[in-house]
Image 1 (spheres, rainbow over the protein chains, first blue to last red):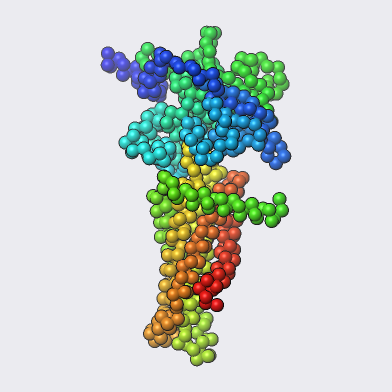
Image 2: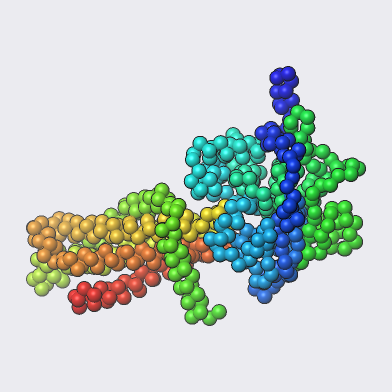
Length: 303
Length: 254
């Protein structure tokens, strides 16, 4: 029995089994849905002006609990700005930003620190602190909170296992490849199990298998950890993965990804398409593909 | 924006930055290890250039003034002249300028590249205030080490003058040292310590402010580093004048 089990585990492609143990429990747990009606993130008429140009023009949308909102759009359409607003890294000129129903628009930097601790952010290029090792990068938040070193180490190892990078624990960011840096960035953002996670073009400039791994991480968070997220991208294969596959835990307790296909299932991903700081489409990927807007069709097909 | 409003805006931003850093000192976490690390890189790291600068400045001062003093028959005042110039002016200003070249540039380049690579945003996103984690330790390290470096520059300068007076002009060692001892007053030394305190504060604030305000990629890092070094150097020299006057009034040594 033991041997059979360990063979199964060896056969799984680079997935962490610990997460799946927790996930198996959470699948059957009673869900308290009294506050699920409150959106995790809500934008109300948010406008930002820069150099006389509207970077965001009266942007309004909601991300519900457990939902992954894929924001599509060309470069410079205000995607990254949107994410930075959620964290209060920049402030809107008008409009409101709400996180878990809390209006954070006029929060001071000190108040914002409390909100930010509950949100994980994955930056475009990883944004690792290059004077610190991988371990110190992932442990940053815990060190700042003065957590005892044994707990820090356990948590860092758990997070690095989640992104499958435990071997790189003592390396410096400069020694890592682009994809590894991005994964360390994900591990760092997920310390403390935030329920809201922002992905700022996490797969830009990565080879397809690595990009796939990162999408799988996002799917695991969505389907197994009930994380609400905004996934900014301009790569269509990310959209395909996130909208047509879902993560489940199989009988052996391993995480596997199943294709939606013709099955009736509700993958909790919605698409938002932006152009020049405005929403031009909001809905599911099926309706996006059927939309007859010329810009959208050009974006989807590339010509 | 015209130049006056821009200047006032910068002044306001720098004051807020310094105030933010100062406020952070009274709250936890205190970032003591970071401060010690910075003191090591700012203070111990600048030791060599400060020793060399001090020694040769003292030496050249002796070299240049000996002839003049000799023509007035006042060679016995050589130590007095060298030491007073060093302690009052050359020590504080040259040390500040050398440290500006070495440390201000390093700070603004480091913070600038952290801004450009989104590390500052990442730090804020992780719930840590970069002003307290990065700015405050650098400011404190500068304020503590610059007066000490100045002191070392002064001592090395006097040593340089002494060496030149003995080996080049063959004066008796006691003549130089006695005039140093008779010449320097407590007021000179107080002034020599107060100045670097103020310089360090100004230099640190300028370096951190310019670094954190970096825009526009790697080119921006170069630009903000240059601006930081130029601004800090000029501010040191301007502040030196007003400090000298203020100290004269306060200490009553007009």
